[in-house]
Image (cartoon, rainbow, N blue to C red; front, top):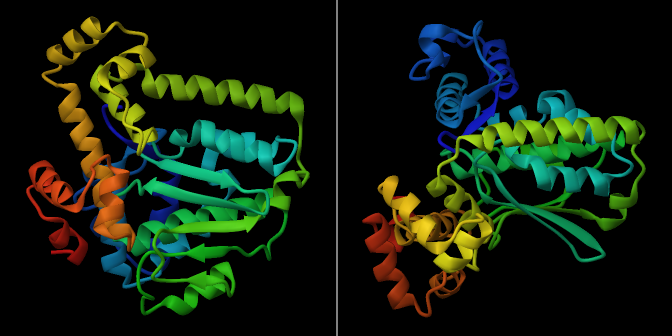
Length: 332
């Protein structure tokens, strides 16, 4: 998509949360496209960069290190707009999760998620945190929002989950236990939230099959509208991001987009783009995610981005980003 966007409800809830602590709205909106227009004329969606800047402003002005947790616990079913309504009409939690996987770009067009079910536990992770924010804020926001949404769907306000976090305990670590429960683990290889797979069959109190069909049709229409203006390059990036670790060759990507390889190359050339550049961009994104958000060794990261050893990975990563893996991992 030309611009990554987020529902306006998230912005409005964040503004309200910050203003309740005494923050000045003018300072909250500084550096965003809303600084001049204000929020009275806000559309249905805002660009991710505006959300990112607003969150950074709010963190600085409120002095609340746990702002991600606070915001996530306010993003309830109503905050998710049409998708939240669709969740409520599903027969069980499994159906709602399927809808989430299918239409999660309505919540953030740059969000990429992974969901697994091994029969005993389900695990939700995010491959790419959708905002360029401190890792703890992004994980807190994603996982507390996920928990809060499930609590609302199941009418289980005391529901708890196991939470794995790929960083050391922050100063406000006690707040994690207050939100998620006692099973919170830091310094993990990769972040994720886990819950009992039996919940997938839990009947939702507000199930309505007829309404579910109508809401899903509207979700499909809205998602199509978001994707309508995508360039071939943007469509390629979206596919490659979803196929993390597989990285198809150019002819396969062309086929997925219903284009011949020749037409695909020609359209990329018109956009002053190439498949290799797009592939390298996505591999760099995935590698950066692993460096910043996991404790995986470089050899494992190299394998996950399609390189056969650590030396090749170091050279390739420097070529892609102009930085060394060590610099990124240290936060230099």
